[in-house]
Length: 332
Image 1 (cartoon, one colour):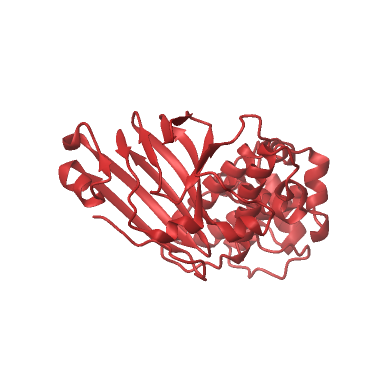
Image 2 (tube, one colour):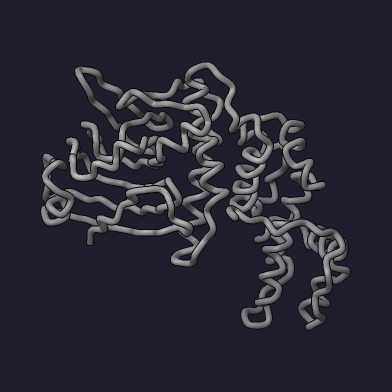
C-alpha cells in the first residue's frame, strides 16, 4: 500500500504518522516512473513518515534503486532534506558532480524528490525534510541543490542520536496526538548546526542549554533502563563535557543523574502498579527499569514517595513526591 500524503506547508500542530510497504513490480509502479530498479521483481521498500510543523521525518529501507527528479510537488522547493545513511551506499548527482555517502555519513538535497540519486545496494536512511524558513531563522541559507557535511562535524552524532530516539518515541506513540512545537525547535537548531559547523561556525544547537537538554532527555528516555547508563556516558553520547551537560540542566534545579533516576523510577512505578495483574518480582522490575539493585530502587522510592516496593505491592497508595522533578517529556 502506498501513502502519498506529504506536508505542503508548515502548520501542523500534531504528529501525522504514515507507514508503507511496497514489493515487486506493482510496488515499484505505485511509486511512479521517476523510480527505476534493475530487478523490479525483487524490489522492496518499507518506510515510516511523521509530519511535524514544517518538518517531515522519514525512515526508509529499500533495495537498489535509481531516482530521477519527479517534478510533481513544486512545494518541495521550500524544503531542504538532510539524509543520514544508516546502511548501504547512497549517491546524489547534479551537473556532473557526484556525492557519495556511506554508513555514518550525511548530506543534503533540495526537497525529497527533486534531485537525481541512487542507492547502489540495499540501504536504509533517516531523512529530515525541513522548511527553509526554519533554517533561515537560525542564520542558515542553503543555495546549493545538493551537498555534504564534513566528517569532522561535532554535531553529527548528537543530531542523529536525537533523530533516532525521536523516531522510536513516535513509533511507540502510534496514532496518539503529540505536541510538537518544542521538537521542531530543537530539530531546527540541530540541523542548522550541521550547516553552521560545515561553514566553520559554532552552532546555536551546541551552545543553547535548552537544545542540549532536550537532546539529553531524549537519550535518557531511550537508555535509562541500562544500569550502566550514567551522566558521563550521556555526555559522551552528546559529544560534550560532563560539566557542560550539568550546566544545561541547572535551570531545572536538578542534574542529569537525578533526571535519569526519575525516569527509572517512573518506569518501575508503572511496572509495580501492573504487578497485581501480571506478577513479577521486585528484583526483575528493578533490573528492567535500570536500577542496579532492589536496594537502589527501594531507596529511590523512599526518598521520593516515602514508600517501599513491598508496601506499594500491598496496595498502599502512592503519596506526593518529596523531590519534585518534572516528568520527562520528549516534546511539549
